[in-house]
Image (tube, rainbow, N blue to C red; front, side, top):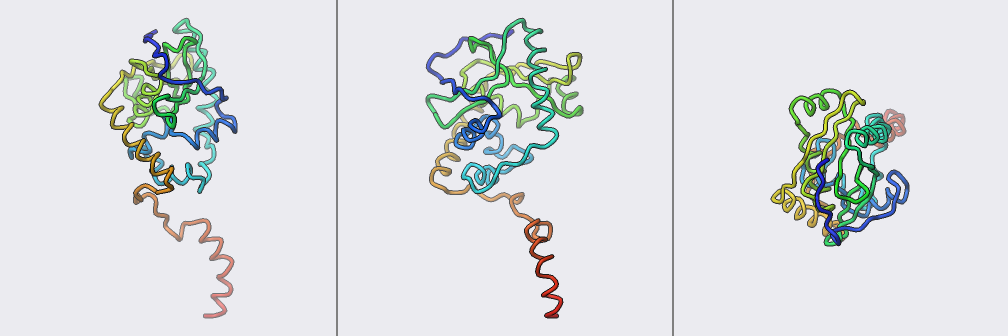
Length: 231
């Protein structure tokens, strides 16, 4: 495996079990590696404003969907497969930056001496195949890994695209200091505004077509009989 020198004093370990209620609350009050692509506008499913609503407690995070659950279920199997391939012991761990204590990263697989780290992804076959054939990693996941590199301080973090023990590929993601600086600046601004309770710029995806809104439909069904009588 590609081992890097561990940077003493660069981070601290947060003793939380990933997926626990305490971990979910910790994530809400910190900028995590998976938040970075959202903050810089590279996440196709969530906008900075949507994330701000969640972090500020105005909106509950999106519920677990089947794809997310499949990924969680596959993670221990993938980690065991990776341990076998690399012949090292790996464990999930949550790390917090000392320089920027509002920045954290939840790792899927880190060696016990913290000189090796890996992000595990169990994705749809089309996305997985691009990684297997071309070492292609979606941009929003590249940002997540770079954010992890920033927190742990290594020269690289691996990306493990996993379907099963016979269909997987390990891709090295090298540290990109220029990108990391841009991400840190954007995340710092987002966090400062979060503390001030100041929302980010509204994106066109943040507008809800009112006729498709669940709340609108419930209200319409309730008051439509009255409207019909008035007419």
